[in-house]
Each structure stands twice: as C-alpha cells, then as structure tokens.
Image (cartoon, rainbow, N blue to C red; front, top):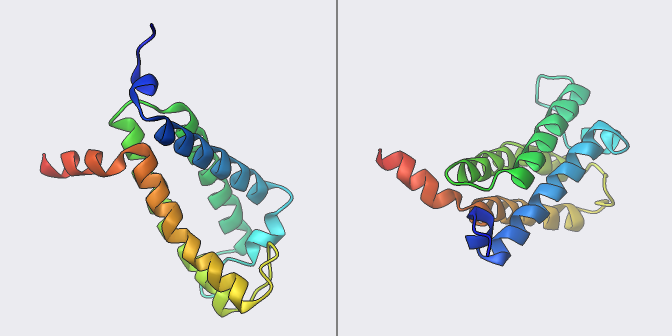
Length: 145
C-alpha cells in the first residue's frame, strides 16, 4: 500500500485544498482574460495604481497560489501556502468593499444586497484557506521558535 503526505490527510482537507486551488486558478485566469474588465470594478478608486495593473498583478498571484495549492502537499510548506493564500484574500477584501460602497456592478452583483452577501463570503474563503491546508498549526510552530 502506498504511503505519503496526501494519503494520510483527511479526504475533506484534500478535496477542500484542490477545490480552492482550482477556484483561484480559474479566478486568476479570468483576471488575465475574459473577466478583466469586471475585475476592474473591484479596484478601489482611492488606490493610487492603475486598475488594470492591479487586476493583472492580482491575477498572476491568484494563478500562482492556485497552482501552489494543487501541487504542495508536505508540511510545513502546505500550511505556508495556505497562510499566504489567506493573507492574499484579506489583502483583496477592500476591493469587495469598494464594489459594495461604490455600487459597482460586476459578476451579476447588481444590487446592494447581492454585493453585501458577497462580502460575507470573503471571511469564509480565508477560513477555508487556513483550515484546508493546516496553516494554523504550522503558523503556531513558527511563532514558537
């Protein structure tokens, strides 16, 4: 019987990590291609950077994180990828807030209610990244060093 880090993880964690990786890979690809304009609606107007540059840069990061989530399975690297993913999701949250406060339509979010509900999902994505990758115990060990 084969043994390895992936086989000893709970199936739920494996599936959750793969789904998050595929989601980020898809979103990142969308940033760089057909959804580029819509993602620009999420760039806060107060950010002193070109909206397209922000969309492209965040798309590249999402593709990289998505790929990392799909290929990195050994701790502590797996947990670090999860922590970095969670930090990225926190860093882009102002874009979701800006879409709500500026009442910008994108991705079918064309009402305040829809944009507000979308805001509730970002903390869940952060938790997903941390829990699916075992990031919290890894970070605890690093802090205790």
